[in-house]
Structure formats: C-alpha cells, structure tokens
Amino acid sequence: MKISVFFDLYCPFHELKDPGQIPLGLMDIGINSSVITTAKKDLENCNPKFPLVQRTLKEFYDEEFWLKNDSDAIIAYPLQGAYYSPLIVKMKQGKKKVFLKFDSDGRMAYPLKRHSFRVPLRERFTARNLVSDVWWHLASESAKRNRHAKVAAEIIKQIELSDGAIIESPEALTNLNYFLASWCRTDLLEKTYFVPNPVTPEFVEGKPGKKENVAVSYGRWDDFRQKNTAVMVETVVEFLKERKDYRFIIFGNGSEQVKKLFEAAPENVIDRIEILGFVEREKIKSFLMNSKIFFVPSRWESFSIASAEALCTGCSIAGTPLESLNFLSMQGFSGTTAPLFDKKAIFAALLQDAIKWDNGKYDPQKIAEFWRPILDRKSVAKSLQNIAEASRKQQLNPNGTKPISHDLKGPKMFS
Image (cartoon, rainbow, N blue to C red; front, side, top):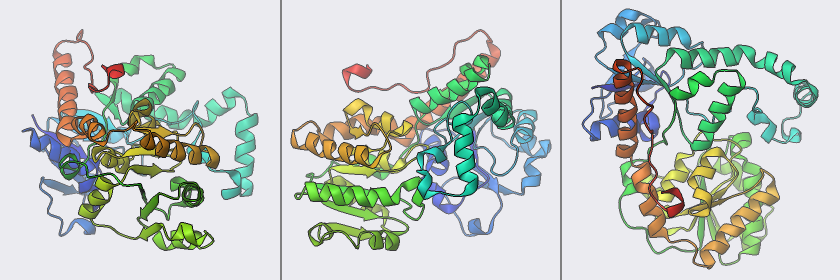
C-alpha cells in the first residue's frame, strides 16, 4: 500500500509539521509515501526525505493525473481558496481512497460560533464587526442556519465524497459530529476519526532533565488575535509578580513587538524574562527538557504541536480551554486549562499549574512516557494505516465495523 499526502500549500518548513511528519512516519513503518503539492518557487531547492510530486493546480483537476499516480490512498488537506469537492471527485475517479485531513478544531460552521467571538470587540472594533456581533446575538436560529448553509453544504459534500474525515483532538471530533448532526447528516458520523498530529523524533528521545522553575511560551506573536499576544504579556507579568521564584522564556516571530509590550513591567519582573527571536530546534528541546511549564494563551488552534513537543519532554501545559489543550492536559494529568478565555482565568490556570508542581502532582518522566507513544510519528502513521486498510476491507465487506482510530493507554481513567 502507498499512502500519500496532498497539500497544495506545502513549503519546506512544513517538513517539521504534520504534512511532512505524516509521510515520514509512514515510511518509518514501511509504508510507501509522498507529498503531492502545487509547484512553487519555494520548493526549487527543497530535497525532503520523501518523494515530492509537484504539478500545476490544473493538472490536479485532471482525472488522468490520479489514474497514473501510484498511491492507493490520499490524505488530503482541504484545498485553500477554492471549492474542494471537484478535486475529490477527480481523486476518486483515479481509484484512490481519499481521507480528508481537516487540520481544525471542528468549529466548521453553525451551530458553533466563529473563532472571532473569542476576540473582544474592542480589539477588532469596526462598524461591520459591531453589526455582525449584534446580528449573531439577536438573529433566530433559522437565520443563522441560512447564513451558513452554503459553507455547510460544501463541507458535507466533501465528507460525502471522501472515504473518511480525520481531525486532531477528541473534542474537535465531537464538534465536527455535532455540526453534522445539526445539519441532519448523522449518517456521516461513521466516516469521522480522531488522530493527533505527530511530533518530530528528537522530542520522543532522551530523558527529561532536572526541571527548574521556568515556564516557556513560543509562537507567532505577530499574530496578535489568534496567539492572544497582549494577554500573554499581561499574564506573564502578573504571574512573575506572584511567583518570584520563576523565570519565563519567550521566543518566536514578533519578538520585537513582545519586547515593547513588556516595557512597562517592573524591573524585578523584566529581569526574569528572556525574550528571543528564532530559536534552533535543538535549543527548543533543551529549553523544554529543563523547564516545568509550557504556557499556551492562544484563542484558537487546530492542535498546538508546540504543546505536544513540550509534553514529550516532560513539561506540563497551562493555557486556554482549546479543544486540543483539553485533550493534551488529559484532565489534569499533564496540564491545566482555564475555564474561560478571560485574562484572570488564564492567570489562575498558570498559577494553579505552578502550584501543582510545588505539591509534587507532576512527574515529568511519567508525562513524557505517557505522551511519547501517542504522539510519536510512527504511532500516528500506524493509526492512519489502520484507517486506510479498514476502509479498503469495508469496501469488500460493507457490513464491517468502523475501526478505532487511536487507542490511548495511560492513567487508569483512560484504560
């Protein structure tokens, strides 16, 4: 069997993320794989460890391309910027099993609110946003449904055409299935699966170091709304005022903007904050191996691969009540999530997580040992292989049962 990944936006940096780690994981377990993408200048000197197939978008809409391609199954990320259903049709006409990789928290459309509602109106104030917010709170359910009907119809069509839909966390799966049930398509629930995103091999190797009173946070801080940059800064300041025994390491894109936000902080707080820009992968692992807490203030994420990497080095995670973080914190076993996206709630979660370390509630070795087998790219690849093979068998035996996508083995409550 050959299982390939289709992702039209693939660029070299994706090799360290799920679009690149999935084919590498499949190859690790002896499954042929490749990445299929649109030709672009960024890939001219790209030489990944897997075959990289580049074509024009027009060629992908030709059935002949898929008939000639030797893949048995395609893990397909939804095409960006255009309706996706016609492309799935071409893949199916090319005799491929197609599994959608939604890369999402499952908040597709009505009845779940858009992510923008998590951003206070004062941060995105325009006349249009004001009218939109008022409309959402006052409109009837039928009006909301009608507004989302076109988007919902396209998503449902994609799942109808595909052999399965894969999403990154258990709550994201619940959201997706709630969406389908709300649009009277419970028949499609049999096609939906949860499979987490994988981490790169270096994070599942080595023993966690001696943990210090250090918290780490990194991300694209120039994306103020999603990453919640201003609240991150305010929370870190309040935390370090309260916990004078802790230090914070912050890095990622937008570090200069972050430094400016910290200018008003007291000197005894600034002295315990290290703000960096780009950090090499090996250095990231070193930071995490010796730190206790990974802080995630984001307002939305599909998965948060950075949190997954932190867990594999024995850190706990503290952050917002995202679908993925609720999974990765594992009901308190490996982290603390706030009940709300409110600044005070996030601060309380971070403080509580530090107290759990004080009281010996966390064992970094046990955290790493629990998460590594789940997030290892070979484990994720095996889950995807099982789904693909079960789908093929089910085609031969239509009365067969749906396979389990991922088996969590860990604390007794999840046995």
